[in-house]
Length: 243
Image (cartoon, rainbow, N blue to C red; front, top):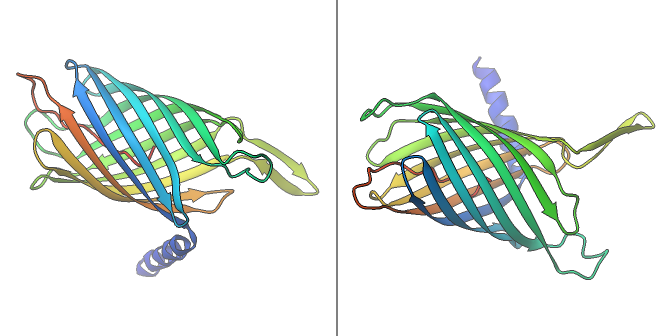
């Protein structure tokens, strides 16, 4: 058993050294209109080993009809370097993305109790790009959160991506695929709740991509929640760099 664990750890470390490394950061402001409806505005900045890789802005509307069920609709605009600059004269590219998701809490803490929490999220995502093929994909994520300890909380996630419009065909006994058809994302982060309104997030994420070079990045985020008077304090999840 120990040898198997060491083998898995060795393979993961070897893949990590061969992966593209970067930093994803975000700052967001959120406000809760009532017990069921919340809005969030987020600014994104991403960097890789070559420098700047992406900037963007995202607006997300959260709706929670029940304690164990919630929905989210997000629009995101991004700008990034044009990888097809050889084929055209454009220096940059941009993308417009819409994502609709539904989340279900498999385990949740009882009122005024601090326990482990587990949630499952499914989402459909559509993105429009200028020079690249626009993807349509499904994302399924499982998240586990530890109890809060001295304003700190640990989150672990595993997420699966499936491209609905990936092209696959056989040519001379070789499978040709256009666009990613499968992808796994593993991440962990620490939430630091400074006070009722401000929260920091520090983490690490690894992308296991089937058809492209793997990616890994460090994540850092900040969230400020605008609270109204007589509003109960509720934790706002911030996963700024993993979407």
